[in-house]
Length: 378
Image: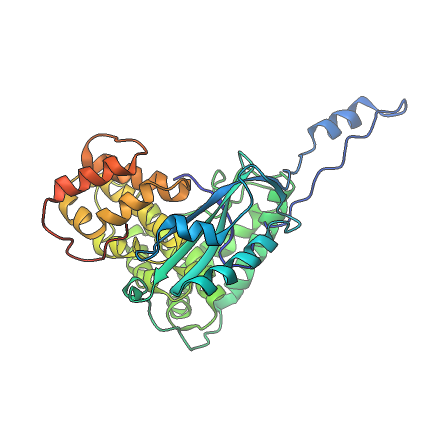
């Protein structure tokens, strides 16, 4: 699975995790030794915070044409450059959302921003749920309890993440997802000497405290604790057990928990000789309101169809064909890439990036029978 850095889910979180520009190289002086010059040359260079804006897209409204929505949303022209570390793009988000909500009524509206570090580009997606389409948000009630964390594992995990991202900003660790760990799913990895000593605590503590961690996941009102718990659970090292524990969190009211739960389901299925995750919850999650919901659900579906091919083609197209076609037509890679992969496997051929071609194929394949669940999103 290709990983991208999500810079912000909410309207006001438009700034990237702070990165620091490397100081310009110092001119060599006569007294400088060859070794010191080599050390400076080998020092990691922090990535630039300057990103190029590629555009804005809307997703999810069945009632308002996209061209009208984009006209009201308004954004800088594609190609404009912004320092995301300094929040230079934030004012555009803050001005746009009130303007959109003054013009149209929605049950849900969320601006999100995804950056692509290799190309230093970013895009904005506006996710919408029309009034009357609240069925797309079938989430569980928010937990109200408070469960003490066992052995300080959640606090230790947060400290690990803080240390990892500091090293990442300094260019001292591999790209996210390229490092190694001893869990079924890695978040950053422990390759760096500063991080390596931290993992043993999770390897031993998570299996020993599994029951309490599951209580945190089900009962604790702290969204961040539930999300961190999901990141710890892969240390149980049983794919089947992890799938069972994670499934209820697909309907968590907090998007970060849903995102991590769906990510884990997809990761547990990836490369497996048999299907480990149920199809129904994945298809339902494709209709959830946020890009992070449908992206992770779509990747989970990719790994299901990679394992079983088109065995459930009709069920997938009946319940999620429309939303897959909509995703396949997006410029946002996090939407388009997994949707096109699913459709290509189901069709046995790749019809490219033309949503009209995919729409025709889906309609021809499922015939005149209407979808068995979900609603059409044009």
